Length: 578
Image (tube, rainbow, N blue to C red):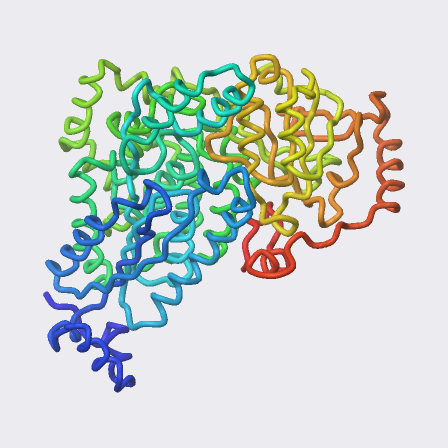
C-alpha cells in the first residue's frame, strides 16, 4: 500500500517550497519521483582507504531497493580519512574531530533537504560512529549498512603489523624485501581491516544496537551477500517510514546495554568508550564509561579474533557473526528491544535460529579447516574470562582512564614502575627507537588530549612496545590521548582530566612511581624519585607542583583543531563538540 503523503516530511515541505521541485526536475527527476517518499542515501564513499573505495555498487543497490519499494533515493557523500594513513604525523590530530564534522554534514543533508528517511553506508573508524550519531540526532527512520571487511591476507599479515616491521627495517633487524612483501599483501581487498579494531567494532555495535540488519556486520566485502544487504536496506527503509519506526524507538537504554554486552563479548575497541556515550546522549539516554566497566565485568570474551586472538574477522562472520554471539548470550540481552527489521531482537534471533542463516556461512570455515568453536568460543570455554575493558581511577586519573585489560599480560595487571615522561609522542618514539626505555618503566605521553591536540592515537608507540619481547610484558604506556582499536598490551588511554586542563597527568615527573592495579581499577602516583610515599604526602607534593604549573600555549591557533580545542568535552564524556 502507498504511504499516506500527509505523513511524509518531504510532501509537507513541497507545499511551502515553490522552488525545490523545479531544481529537482533539473536533475532529471520526474513529477512522479517528486511525489514519492524521499530517502537519503549517504555514504562515506571516497578514496581515503580500502574501507570505502568499494561503496559505489552498494550505493546503487541501496538506491535500487528504494526504487523497488516505491521511494526516490537521493545520493549524497561525506567521505572520511583513514586512521592508518593519518598515523605518525599531524594528520592523526584530525581523526577524532572528523567524526563530529561528518555527523554535522549528514545532519545538514538529512534535514536541509526534504528527506523522509535515510540509509547510511560506512564501515570504518570514524565514519560508523558519525553515522550512528547522525541517526540518533536526526531521528528520522534510518538504517545503517556496514561496509564489510577485507579478506584475510597472505600469511595472515594485517596492516597494523607493518608498524613494528618498519621499525625493524630501520634498526637493520628485518630486510626491506621482506617488509615490501608484507606491505604489498596486507590489504588484499576492499573493506575494513581484518582485526577487531575500531572499524570492525563499530560495525558490530551498529548491529547490536538494532540499527543494522541482522548479520550485516563484517560481511567479507567481495561477497555478493553485501550487495544483497544493501538492496534489502533500501527496501526496508520504506517500511520504517510507513510504520514511523524512528531511532528514538530503537535507541533505548536497553539497546545501549545490549551493545555494550556484545562489545565486551567480541573484545571491542577502547574507542567505543568515546563514541557510544555520545550516541546515547544524542538519543536522550545517559551512558557512561562506568556502564562499560560494570557490564564488561559480567561478560566473557567469546571472539578469538585478531589482534589479541588468532583469526581475522572474516572468519568471525563465517562463524555466525553478531547473531551467533547474541544467541550464546541470549539470557543476558534485552530481547524486547525494537530493531530496524520492525521486529524485536528476540524475534530476529528466533527467525535466525530456525533458518539456513548459519548453514550459508559455515562452509567457508570448512574450506580453511577451522571449527566454529575455535573462532566463537562457547560461554563455558571463553577466550577471556570477562570483558575486554576496564576503567581505572585514582590520583592520576580522577575522572577515569581506559585499558583493554584482556589483552594485557597477567603479570602487568598489577604493576608499579618509574615514570618516563614525554610531552609529545614523537619524543617517546625516539626513546623507543633508541632503546632508552627499560623493562619496568611506565611511559607517560601527555598533552595529547582532545583540547591539547585533538586526541590522536598513540598507536605507533603502543605497537612498538607490543612487538618488543623485552618490553611487552614489563613496560606500560599511559596517555591522555587514545589508542587504535588494534592496540594490545599494557596501554592506558583516555586519562581524564587531560594535561592541558591541569589534570594530574600534567604534574607527573621523571621517576615518580606509578601503580597500575587492574583488579582494583586503580591508576595512581604512589612515590617520588623511586621511593614509595603515603597518599597524604603524594597529595601534598602534587599540590606543590600544581602551584608551579602553567598550561602550555595552544598548539593549534586556527582551523578546525582550534575550534575543537575550545569546545571539546573531556574524553570521559566522548570528546565531542556537542
